[in-house]
Length: 300
Ligand code: TA6
Image 1 (cartoon, rainbow, N blue to C red):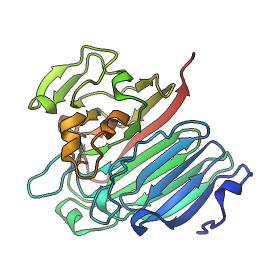
Image 2: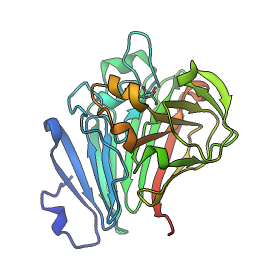
Image 3: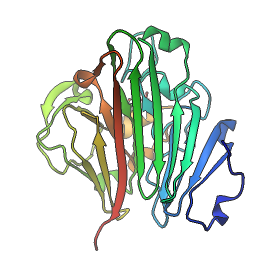
């Protein structure tokens, strides 16, 4: 495997480029440059912290207050939530995948100009509580950002798990965005003691804390952002759940790794399989969660 050390900004060829260096907190990071976009992925959590198309605002929100430390999740970007979502008694929230240093298995600058990078979750003591499994994460960077989390059950028993790509999007003004594609879906409202509700709106607006798990939702979701002049489109396969989260004022103040006002510029639309959509994977089977993120400029 060869890794370029040259300056990607001087690259004028059509092949994408991967540069490897020590990032924040001296954690190793990959910088990917293609003719359409740039991206950054930390080995810590196989965490995509940045994706930006040329001449466009960054797609992903990253907190100014994020920690970049081993054993601590990064606040923003795309944390990988696996093998459980939310709290679990005596264990840390959202599983251990987001705080492990993933192994870089391969990277492929393809002839079409895209770059794909594959990571594998290393064996770790926490994994021994589960049937033997392999978790691979492939990130493809081109005009879009495509993420694939593939989990194989290598054991002789069923493997039940939750997964979620807890994606933080950057928005111009949270009160101005609308979320489309969830009308009619049932959701668990965590901000209202997990009450089960039905989504009535095809243009969901955020004006207070929102923390909802939409069940049985496999269709695309779009975020219209008039301030940044773009629509974000989230397409997915192998995902039955969609989580929508904004902490709003009080929760923002309670999070040590999140700025008090940062809730105004972020919105999580998370794709995965959680709660009653948890995956029950038979022995020898593989489940792949695939999410494609793209943007288009709003007319006018
Ligand atoms: O996905 C929404 C959520 O589960 C919220 O309840 C919220 O607390 C958030 O994730 C962030 O969790 P974290 O463990 O990263 O602070």
